[in-house]
Image 1 (tube, rainbow, N blue to C red):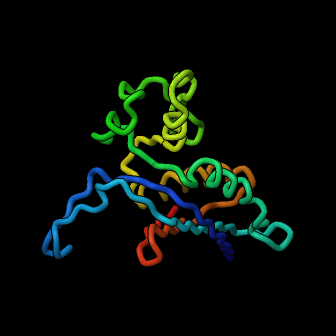
Image 2 (image 1 turned 60 degrees about the vertical axis):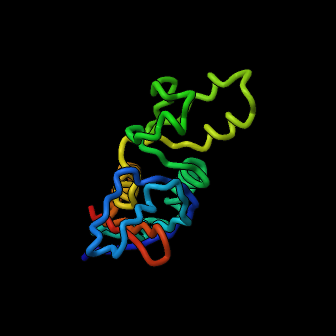
Length: 178
């Protein structure tokens, strides 16, 4: 037997899919709206599975509280940008040389805000809103990144992540399977 549980998380984020291309035959127009800076109310459903139960459960739902904290403190109301985005130096001019970035353990970088000492507060506020990744931040790539983070942590208690559903909008989602 195998059991599966799921927990849902919501967060707001912005991104830009700088690599977007369209086939007009299928899209009906050539508008590359996802290349624009834009935001979403994201919804993520994490599915955990196990072939054994511990105290009658795959795991306690509280064992995902750390992930809610990660989403709230790292991604909620942040702008996810690919370090290879052609607009990187335009959007982050003080970091255009891609130096002075802090590497975080979960596969992303943040601007080192210490270099802004003495500069206007609005620059600090702008830069603290960026999460820098090394992939185009599509729903597929974001869900794959998040799956890796969850899978690594949950493996410590012998629980597998079977899949992640990522809703970019209420009608559009991607699913990544483990």
